[in-house]
Length: 218
Image (cartoon, rainbow, N blue to C red):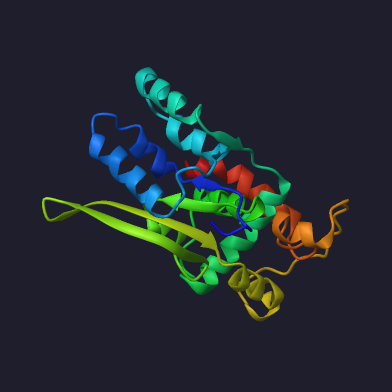
């Protein structure tokens, strides 16, 4: 894997597949995919929002299965930088992909977590992290009985597209005007390139709204 990335961030649907113990073919195919692309030894992380998506409206037995699956991996909590990056991702995705549709909050937070922490995303649903905001690095569709059985994708945030949008956001009429804000940090400029997409062009109110919408959307 490229040196700039430190591991894999698993989307919620990836863990849903892993928890299906009765289907051994899924486990075999996922391992085959990881080995093919030399990813089997990479650290696998998950977003805190994945816990909400996995545990909501589930019976106790299912919750325990998910807990066992997640216990083997490392959580990435949601912080201010991730919320600010998710805000920019939301605007960029609406501009580049569909101006009439607001991206799901959970997917935005997972995508922003990957950007913030320099992680690749592994998912079984490409529509949640589609081009041009995300680049496909690896993909494979497994066939069983001549039909599509399991699709796996590894994607990375398209930093160029995201930053191009941010640098020219005043051109996009649907983006609300933002007051400049200053964020103090001891990080170097290079370190904050990944930790926070921008420090002056995101309205504080916007990332607070993202947090408030988590329960509403889910």
